[in-house]
Length: 429
Image (cartoon, rainbow, N blue to C red; front, side, top):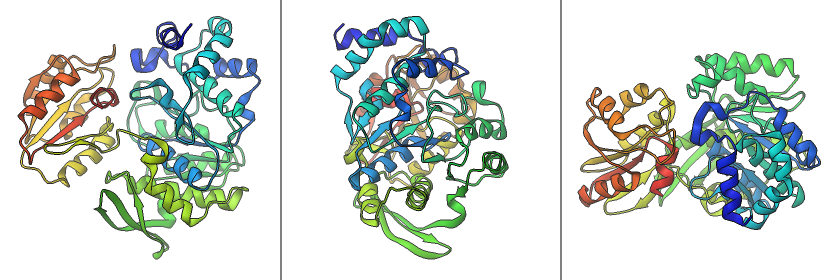
């Protein structure tokens, strides 16, 4: 098999969540354990950080990897889903896994894969872990795919577990309440391993405290000891101060991820670095912290987080796709000057879209579209449901057609926003 045939094998033969949804979610770790046992348990051969959370886990993972790289550590990064290239999921020092490495892994393990019949995600986890072990990374940042307790990544024993926040998403698999979802995320808390919680929340805090106590794991709530102030956007960077007990600890930190939701993630990142310094042999100095946060996109190649695609008219995309994510997106839109607002919007059909639609601004012209995956919600149906919330616009056959129509209609001082689903952003980029 060549590289393209290898990808075709992975995409067509294995259940893939991004394509078919809940049916691809395996509710135990057996397949991942069997796969990794067969290839020599690579997950035991490198140190790691484990990142979960409903929103912000991707940005947080990339920030942490960027800081570790800035300190000079050989840093693996495993994230999902990818936007354009499968190999985005598996990186070392920002560089994607080679095509030959992907092909060789699948060729060497094709018989095993056919015997075990794992999901697409289970195979990519095993592939990532073997790649990091083979290349002897100093540390790998591992982002949870979905939930935590039963996620395929949850066979590692990390230096620190990190949970960014909890909100309602994937309720058909993780539970219908914040308390239930927190219970699933808390499943990454391990015996004696420190855990950092990004945001204190009334429903989830007791769940995390109880689980940490059961596991004798030191627990740190980032927002209970650290605060942000003087948040502003200048020179295409997010700038802020971080205080500890109301005293400035990090002055004029800058981050090239400029979404107004990022300060919450930055608190989790800074607290994680502090706990890493205090509890392990890793040593990250302030220079690496500043440099890493300032160059996340450069060091890790992250895309899709309040990303400017062009100017005149201003076109911005963001992967926020659930109630909490869209709430933050709206804050960013409200904070952006524009004459008229155009929104290219698509969603997947296994989400509760009514809550998201109820948050969307009525003062925009909409360009409804269906992302090019099986789970994509038909643009006509989306347009009809949106109409009940006074969101008015036309339906389009593809994301690109909708994007082009919005850009053509927009004047120089207008804003075109593209979002609603990670898969819409992937096609737009």
